[in-house]
Structures are given as C-alpha cells and as structure tokens.
Image (cartoon, rainbow, N blue to C red; front, side, top):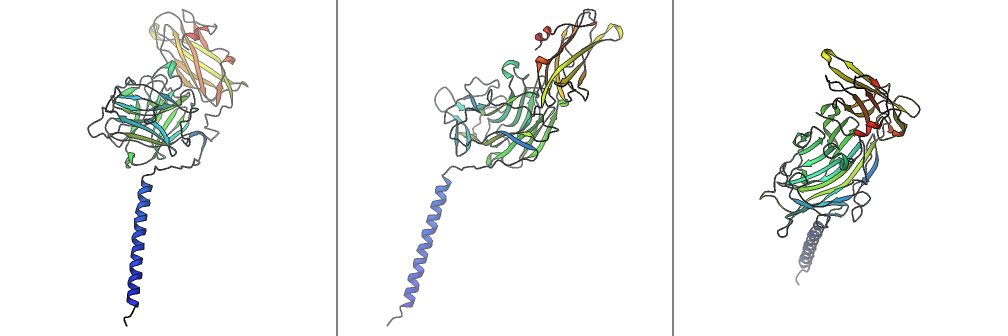
Length: 415
C-alpha cells in the first residue's frame, strides 16, 4: 500500500502557493487603486514661536471661500504681454481634497489659446506687517510663471508701482529658482529690488513653504523656514511704500516678457497646488506693529527756511506726533509732501523717542516764493492715526520765505 503522507504534503504546499499568489495579486490591485486616488493633505496648523495666527485659508471646503477670495477675469496681457486668459472655470481653478488647484490649460481650438486662474483677497482681507506664508507645489516648464504675491490696497487710487508690490514667490518654470522681490516708485519692473534663491530640491516635485516676515522698515524672505534675503527701507532707491495694508494674490500666468512663451518641451496642463495660506502677527509686544494700542495725531509741523550761501534757500521741517494722552509716539512713520516753488525733498521719516520726525529737507532753490510742507499720512508706532485730532498738518512760508501760520486746506493738493 502506498504511503499517503507525501501526497498530503504536496497538496498542502500547492495550497500555500495559491494563497500567496492570491495575496500578491490582491496587494498589487490595492496599490493600483490607491495610486489613482487624489492625495488628501491634512496639514495641521502648527504653532510658530513668536507668532500668533490671525487669518488662514486651509481650503477645507469644496468651493473657494467668497469671504476670502475674488477672481481676476480676462486677458489682454496684464501689463506683461502674458498669453493666458484668466477665468473662474472649474477646469482652471478648483479645490480637491483640501488642496487649491490653479491649472493652466492649452486650448487647441477657440480664441483663447491658454487659460488659467488668478485669485486675490482684495477688498476682503488685507494685512499690514506680520508673517505671510503658503505651502505650495509649483508647476514647471518654459513659459509657466507662477506667483504668490501682494499689492497695496490703495492700488486702485495710487496705481502701480506707487501702491507697492511684494513678491513672496515667483518662478518662471524653466529653472529651479525662486525670486523674492519688491516693486515701488523708482524701482519697479526689471529694476525691482530683490534676490533669487536656488533650492537643492526639485520644486515641482513637492510642497514647500514660502513666506515673508514683514515689519515697518524691513521684509525678509523664507524658503522652508530658512531665511534667504532681507531688504530694509534704507536699501531701496526710492520711497519705502510697505507701511499700509496689502492684499494677497495667487496665479499662474503663461508667457510674458520675463519667462518668454511656452516652448516645444512645455507640457500642458500645468498645476500650482496650494495646501494653505496663513497670516501671523508678532506675539512680541515690543515689536508687534499690528496691535493698535491707541490713537495718535499730528501735534505740530514746524518750518524753518534756511538761508544758505549765494542766495540759496532750503526748507527744513520737524513734525511732532503725540498720542491721545499727549505723550510722544516713537516709531511712527510720517509721510508728507512739499508745496510751492519746491516740490521735491525728503518725504518720509520715523519719529524718535521725543515723538519728532525730522529734519525733512526740501530741495534747494534760488527762486523767491512759497516753500511749504504738508503731512499726508502717519502709520505704525503701535497707534492708529486719528486725523480729526490733528492740530496742524501743514506749515507754510510767505513769498519771502518767512514761516507763517495758516489753515490746512492746501494739504488737499497733495493728499
């Protein structure tokens, strides 16, 4: 009689092999299915030492939050000969699994060859000073221009670049380089002040944190929490215009003077993915310029006409800023302008411990006529500017150059 044990062992081995094959096939299937599912990012809002979160959009809803964002719509080059038309169409902008997607598309037919999206917090959310950051995975390719940036809220009235522009992140697709730049009066466009940064990581392969830390007289840029540049108010060849509210913009442009048009190697569509946008204020009471602890006003504007050699004259101004209790306000930025025969000179300065900003000097002149100065704005110093409490905001001279008292109605000429 044959021994049945070897046959049993063979049957058991065969069964084990079949089970293993089944498990491998099942595992591969699960992996394939999971690869086809969109990735959901669940980034916790982490505490930053020295900072307090005051606003954020985590893109946790299925649609864009209309309390935070509005759309720029249309084409026309956007001042840079860009090729895209911005839309609010689902294929160009949407939220999926907690991630904002801005998608640049090439259209083979129709009048709009490229479409994309641009959103902004204008007239909804604006910020003055603090830490502004976003977690972004940028697109890539020649002619793809992605940006996370800010414009002054006074843009509609002051115009660009007088309102100021802060570029937190720009990338032009063809290189693994990011740019942090500011644009203001006298230093805009190709003459903007900033610095490139060359990360080792391939930026389009994953999310990175792009941020600025912004105070009344300096802005620092950060990549993944490492600072790579700082610009101070003394380092720009024009007025420092970053002392008032700014709004946030996110967009992907196609083409333009700087990046150039897409090339044959550029693949469409291209997506910029945004996990979150967050704004923090400093929790250091000594440096926190977002906390408004009281109200300040212009107490006096004191003018002296300096008689220099060879009949040359020059205006000199001191401006005194006090709080509501009559105490001097330190660290307030005073802005003003010159009137009369001299229209140029110093236009902004910080107050010292005594609450006095100055001396402001006008340009020199040999002509007879009025030399006058008016204050147009006061910001910072931990106070809000209450114009109604101003005692004087202007100082005037007569045609012979002697200071005289007068009302402040001429301030309207330069405000």
